[in-house]
Structure formats: C-alpha cells, structure tokens
Length: 97
Image 1 (cartoon, helix red, strand yellow):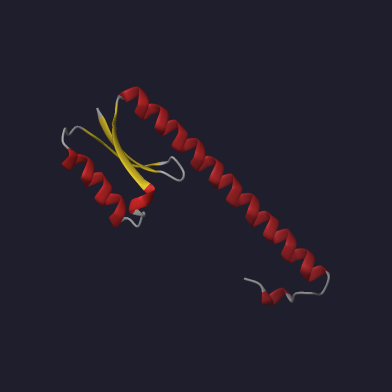
Image 2 (cartoon, rainbow, N blue to C red):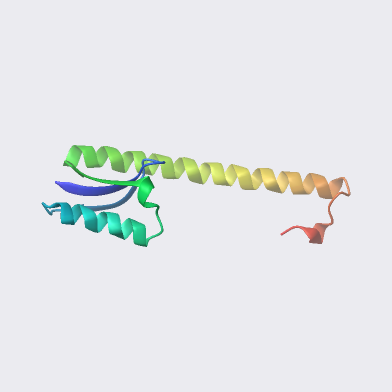
C-alpha cells in the first residue's frame, strides 16, 4: 500500500510514501504539504494500491508536462507582444523586463 497526498485543485500528487497503517501516517503527509505551503483545504490524503498509484503518477506527469507547455507558450506570446509594442513605438526597448 502507498500513502499519497494530492492537491485537490490539480489532481497532482504532492507526496507519496510506502508503508504505514494508521491515520497518523496519513497525517504526516498532510502536515508535510501544509509545511510546504499548500492550503489545508486543497489537499487530501489517502491509501492506494500499486495500480492506483501508477495511475496518479502518470496523471501527475501529464499535468506537469501540460503546465510546462502552457508556460512556454505564454512566454512566447509575451515576447511577441513586447516586440510588436516596440515596433509600434509604444514601448521603449529598455522599458520591459
């Protein structure tokens, strides 16, 4: 069995540990997430078997990859917008950072 702590809003696994058998073991994951800056209302902890864990791990990897792609696209769109503003004389080249 695995213990997982998930971010509710994204479905991503925050932390995973194997073993343990009590609520205290789950609470450890919850407290670790809170200490890392996650909101208590946006985390959940649960027991899962190996197959369930693999499914969550794959979903987390897909969501991370998707987020990285979106960030890259947003950065590129920002570069294009800044370039266009400079070209139109609405922004000096040294005014953006």
